[in-house]
Picture 1 (spheres, one colour):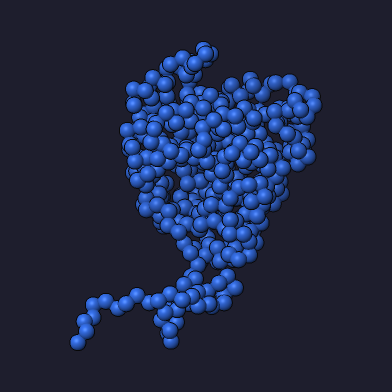
Picture 2 (cartoon, rainbow, N blue to C red):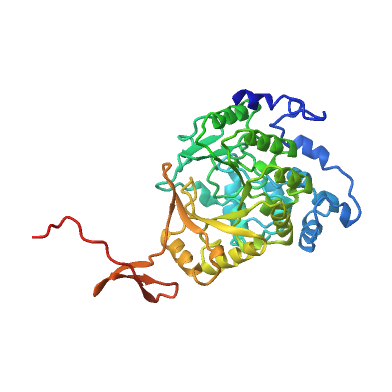
Length: 437
């Protein structure tokens, strides 16, 4: 079987054409390549655009990037080539606060800065407290490290048998194929690694990871993540999916990505055609706030859902960003409208410099309680803590089972979303350890 996998990397495809041997599976859109690609002349007419340009995105183009043609702004490669990555670039578009300037002055410290032109249009130019701005623009509080924080709080490196693979659960593993993202969230769990090498694993590292997966028959579910795997070129994405599908015991492949949210232009029809070939394929989207629910994001999700890809969302609970039932409810109902099912609400991981983002766990429980009964059950995610030290995801639930009725132990007392108490007939188990006289 392993020989077959290795052969699949070098054999000519049926009917001729480009072989996998000729394709570099680590091909990545580098900055120099992007600069060349970004010089493409604007194409006239909506039908010629690589991605629809809705009024909101067009307003961003005119306001912030008037030098860009409409076709350029709609091209994901142009978007990557023109990410805002320095304080000098950022201050051309927003008025930086003293704490933001302080953080940006610590060159090389902490997580890199990167914001796509599209997503920059969603960020307030004059309000440092705006939720999306807080998640993307560095803040001096990132430099403060508090007790319990760690560079790798989930001990992913401890559970990494080969570079790129995190194998914690018996039947599934993370496949971290790149450290590159189109935009960097300030609370990123993998802030220790993302943006450092600015690209995917080497061809040898990817193959070694695939060999490990192929040699571990208990692995039936592989989550392709990073960084963001959808920043890789179409050929590289297809090579990875084809390689995973060549492993008989891999039943399900999932892709973890924020691309439809921060770079929806990447969800091209050619990419969707590739993804559609490798079912069962699932996708987990990183969604943070209702302000991300734009026409462009809706178009990206529609394309993926129409291709038969089940979409779920993962949201990190963040202080002052989304830590209320009202905000989360609006986000989750909006996601349902674009066929994305809320799946996880994460307590913020204790990475270095994250104290200003972390809420008390009680806040999360109150948010979970505030959603129940007030929105569709499909729109209520699991509230979890990914346990520090590699303990895995632990669900946190509001108290609903109050115990047994004192006067009638054969009835359970249950509390509903309004605080009402109800009885459910459930005969108490017989007492053990007693003998009749």
